[in-house]
Amino acid sequence: MPEALSVGGDVRGFAYIKDNPVFRETRLFLMQADFESAVRTSGFTIDASIGVYDSNADSLRHYVHYQLTPEIGMRAGRFPVAFGIYSSEHTLPTRRDMNFDHSSAPYSLEASWLGERGSAYVTAMLAKPVNFFSHEESEGGFVVSQSTLVETGFAGRASWYPTDHHEIGLSYLH
Figure (cartoon, rainbow, N blue to C red):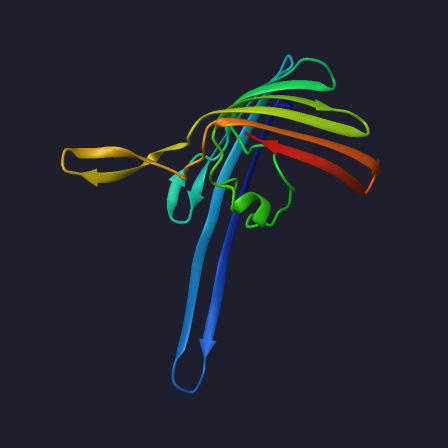
């Protein structure tokens, strides 16, 4: 594989078994299955994902990123907004209740600074996400359906890392 190309994927599911004197039931649920690929060249990264989330095909992340300097970057496309606490727990209240869960990333422009002991992000959220792989029936045929509704606006996030294992941060949403 060329050094400039990165590929990866993820499959996540849930299974349960009910086994009692009355009946036995086994069920398996596919929660997420996705594939992501990125190409890096001359300071640019082009990244795209496609997958199945809650039984619907979608692309939750696709963007172009340009690294202006080793610490300053810009990106445009669909990606999670830099806001709140980052955690692999996608139902974390500071993100989920503000429509910043894993499937609600809007189309955005972002500027970022990543330093040795701090980071800062400014994001302009420009458009609500559209799932181009899902269609809803209507009287006139098919229409492209809207994914989770995320308002347009601005978000900012700044962090200071006093030690290698601690972070103090502030987020702003408008």
